[in-house]
Amino acid sequence: MDKKTVLSGIQPSGSLTLGNYIGALKNFPEFQNEYDCYYCIVDLHAITVPQVPQDLRKNTLEVLALYLACGLDPDKSTIFIQSHVHEHAELAWVLNTITYMGQLNRMTQYKDKSKKYNESINAGLFTYPVLMAADILLYQADLVPVGEDQRQHLELARDLAIRFNNKYSDTFNIPEPFIKKSGSKIMSLQDPAVKMSKSDQDKNAYILLLDDKDTIRRKIRRAVTDSENHIDYNDNQLGLKNLIDIYSSLTDKKAEEIVAMYQSKGYGEFKDDLAEVIIESLDPIQKRYKEIISDRVYLEQVYASGAVKAGRKASKTLRKVYKKVGFVPKTDITK
Ligand code: TYM
Image (cartoon, rainbow, N blue to C red; front, side, top):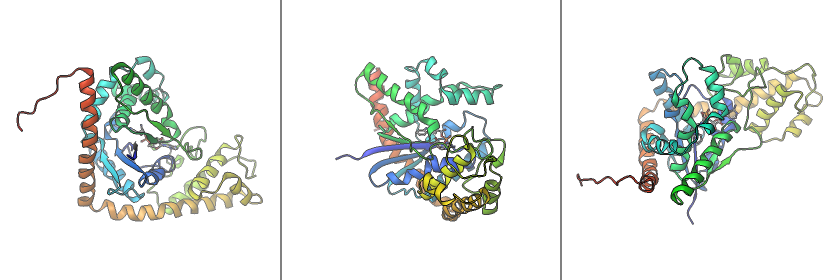
């Protein structure tokens, strides 16, 4: 029987956070043995907000090295850079023509980002979810592991697949989101009402995967909690709830277990232990990362062969799509 397909991607817009790791990246390797996996670094998405070109190049390789350091194996998964597979932009164009403006207007991430960049909202930011749908549908993905903030974009991808299939005949698989119950929305350490994000102005709001031990200890110590001074897991103690979620995701202990462990203890002791849990989880990743990032030849090999494998599948889907919408097939006279 054919393996089912998994696809996901992360933007190379700055260093990755603990939120990216717990909500997405940590889950990627789990699929490698049972699924046909595609993991991309979505640089086309990244340029929908201002980027410094040399930083974008550097960040793209950094995310690639983090993928590998977190356990993605290029012999098992297809790991590639989105802009190396031109079919993404091409399918996005076709999907744009069946997407309603009203749908895109309702996207909460667009609303949030356009508030933040209100002087220079570009059309790419608006049609971003259509490109994401193209990423997913090109590979006929069955499952898309993401954090909670991507649920609405996944809904759009499903919607566009169904609409295209109804309009032209069965072409796309309908993808399902894979969003874990716990850890799919890690919140800011400074304001538990907003998600942890690498674009936060306040550096204490997030932990980066490459933060050193002292920085991690300092940020956790400064994390906002409350004045109850009693360890519990509830919506009145959101800061603490978030810290327990992080602890739970990294140790596979249930929230109730953690609450029981710290019943008679103070926030200080819980935070000290949490910092060590994070350090222990990130330390092996950081060590592998350091080795991998310095091996440019290896990184190039990984993304070059990934682009070939991804391109094969993507071109097959795009060819079908072009045929269905009525484009004249290209004749290759060089053969
Ligand atoms: P991006 O780059 O913002 O984030 C990458 C992944 O990390 C998850 N994530 C979080 N999870 C839990 N808590 C958080 N605080 C947190 N912050 C981020 C995101 O949900 C995501 O899974 N549009 C996507 C990238 C993308 C994509 C795709 C994903 C483009 N094409 C196709 C899947 C399939 C994005 O901006 O993710």
